[in-house]
Length: 234
Image (cartoon, rainbow, N blue to C red):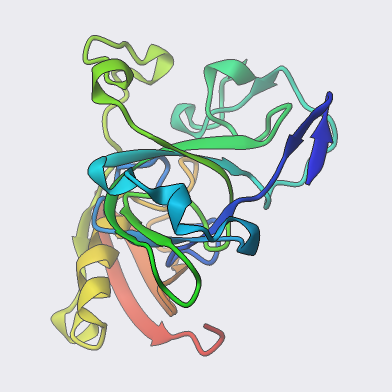
């Protein structure tokens, strides 16, 4: 619990995802709907009454804490990755984690509410852009009649296009993975996990995902998986 100008925030839940490191996490929520995650409430909030009626909604808003961001103070401008890290924008014109209050906001699809489990009620969602264990500060239903704005403009992001790549992964590597991972891993990789400024076609990158270490290279718009090994630490 933290006091902020007379207010108090509490971690109500934590999310379990297949992303154990920041590298590879989708840049925004909803970009990779193939990924699934589970929200587990902290003991004081494991009351099935708290989720009554939630299953009737298709999408949720998650408010969460950038707990992996270490910073002292804040800067009024940041370098958005979508601009290659070469231009500065006002922090409030971006979704950078380096903010006066490190709070994130994600829109996710609600898959299932399980009211009675050994850990109390749990919520399964898809399309989350959070690391495993991220603290959840609040959960709110997404309301299409007021939250959806088809006419909205995207500021400096408009016109940049989707940064995606073709994924080439040998069937022999995919065959060794659980079915859910076989589906979600190529979708995650298609978002090109590399920082924008990294363009070396000979560099071998490594990404932890779903208990596996995935090695790949990227050249001429194609991401090629070269190795997938089981991560014993998971």
